[in-house]
Length: 526
Image (tube, rainbow, N blue to C red; front, side, top):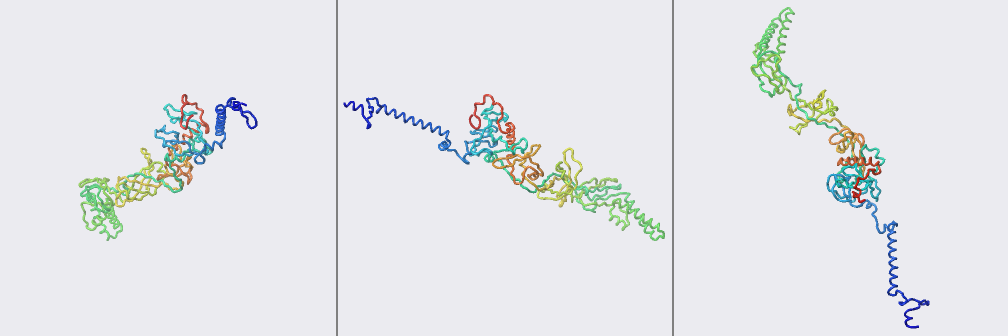
């Protein structure tokens, strides 16, 4: 065999011919390309199998792309909310569509109550932030360019307890982080005593039973005034004035003559004559007494036997001269007011109480008093009288209080503050700030834990000192919201309205606004 044939054909150990370069074998050219394509095909097949396994085999998918578990499952993409409107939540920073405040990032926001751990919140529909009645099944924008707010299933999902909630209210689930951001605070309902203090402003007036008027009972002239100015303090029995009256002079003479006649008739054997003369003397003396002639003046008249031109009139009571109608030389007539003497050792205070307060006031109730002029002094008194009619102008009832006046600290026409404790009961008590007055009913939000607040209709009893007695609706030991109640109230009403719109579980069938379906809203893309 020639050398050319040896180069072109070779045999293996079994005698089979193998093609050489001359027989068209790849060698360094054709054989290398065939092996390259075989390796490439194997690699592509492995890649395809890996892709299929990544999406179809859960264990292989978890190996290559592990997911957070446990508490970390509740953490998703960054969320942003408004501190004044916690129900505004978006996945990107910006401004609140309602108040314009910068949105605050929620760090590690937990899964809302009622949502399975590790599961994504299901969006039912989107609503207009400025008009909740406008909704869309897909992300949209309103005419002002604001993104629609997503409404999640857990926000409108009903439960068995919802049936006991007040009409128009729903349970609010805001989460612990949003509770902190919104400034919501809670207080515990406790069982304790509570009283209803009533504070009224009154005016000090003189005790009318201690006011005496000195009047003339006979015609005459004022010869001398011992008390010649208003406001002077006088004591009982102190001389007030001297009056000249012809009738008083004549009565003095009659008394002296009758007394002398009675002395002469004592030796008479006739009993009738003795009794008549004695009766005339006694009648003359009584007449002098009825003219307010003091006993000391009559005794001096009996002792001296001399008629005096003027008669001195004394003060009937101790007090201050609060009225003066005469001067020296003034002619007086019977029934004319001469002086007014007022005893201020005990005074009255007339105060006005509102209708709902006056119904609980009783005569004899204890009261405390303080004044702006002497704020450190507390005086104890009582209710002396309750007027029978209301004032048509102020719709208040006037109540009279009686107070002692040591040291004459209370002056007539002075303003004074009167404090009454109308009620004192023991029961469940919460801060008054926890109550929301609707005009028809009273609502309180009970903190059930984990950032969930349940609205309850409560019946309120006695109120006082910033607290309120709860007759029904809240039990002792439960926590009630006392701060940012208006946020909970608006959020609860909003969620109740959404629940009515969706029937409790599904999104409303309202058509999507035209030309807005292609925009992205809060909570992600389409």
